[in-house]
Image 1: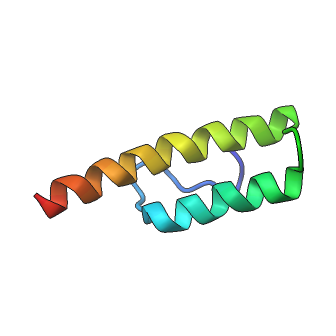
Image 2: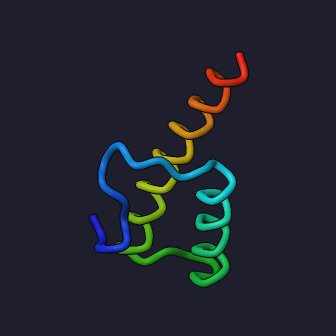
Length: 59
């Protein structure tokens, strides 16, 4: 996990995570390095959890 990654259990909004994912792709261009791919995968997992949390709160 990178030093900028939040500790497990911390909460970022799905919108914030989506912005970070988009910025990663803009920075990387057409392909991700191994380190960028690992960061992307962590962000997507965290984004999915945030989306589930927002759906549960809305219900």
